[in-house]
Length: 319
Ligand SMILES: Nc1nc2c(ncn2[C@@H]2O[C@H](COP(=O)(O)OP(=O)(O)OP(=O)(O)O)[C@@H](O)[C@H]2O)c(=O)[nH]1
Ligand SMILES: [Mg+2]
Image (cartoon, rainbow, N blue to C red; front, side, top):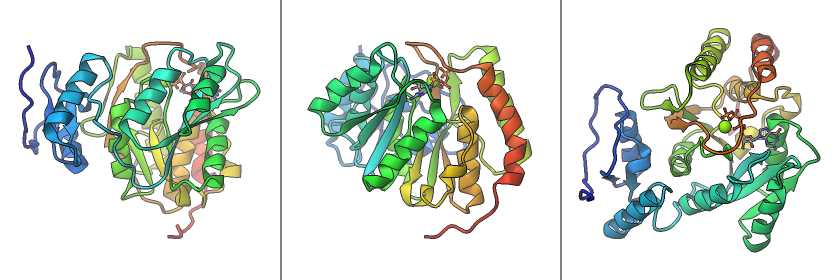
């Protein structure tokens, strides 16, 4: 039996604690209210952001979405603050790629660029078939696994050529919840880089074992110690950049590949004088497919972070 949706005023000053909402929905007028609610412990997977939708239809659509395991799907995709390209790097994501494309496009009015590194499981061909019937989807094929960092750089280059105003990074494994994409876009409207963050109030990881939690926490502590950039989640891979800011960075100088790529990009944005904001997210461990996380990725971050502090010079952002 489902309980009626409640229109709750976000509670300010409540201690952080994610709420295990089962049947309840929190209905809020807009994304600003949603941000306050998530910071106060609400789970965005059960928040209906009206943002101009008719309330009864929005609640019905969200309930149907949640029942189907797709989260609080809106009646129509939420508007982006400008033309937006989501870059979706893939390597062996055959079971995730189509549900991810459907989910992204259901939640936000964006285009998606899949950057596939010749996935042996055929992810690239599946994406191609989707791209052939949906003009919002394009696919960039690269020969062989070349790493996440260069996949994103290739995606950024494509976004610049095609004149997008915002460029997002997102994993193709549902770790980054599609319903958080419009929230991230909302935050990106007023800054140069919006980060979906696990380590600000209201954010957390779900389903990671102790080792993974310590690895991620340790990497962030280490980065904060060395770089003092003020960013809490430096390794987060759920981001939205303002393209005009990204274009001012010396992208040819970016050397990192794995998590270190995210650390390096965020630090370069800060050093270039751009405004970075973090929006809390619940990061969910992948349910399908395999992680590409390795010791090599961790070692790269360990070696690179101290160097970044001296290598990346301060500059002045042009607006
Ligand atoms: N194009 C491309 N995509 C990659 C490569 N390595 C990983 N990916 C994709 O990048 C995204 C993040 O990779 P994950 O395997 O989830 O790695 P992770 O998020 O660091 O680690 P886990 O969340 O623990 O699995 C996924 O969509 C992967 O398919 C690569 O070399 N090339
Ligand atoms: Mg992942």
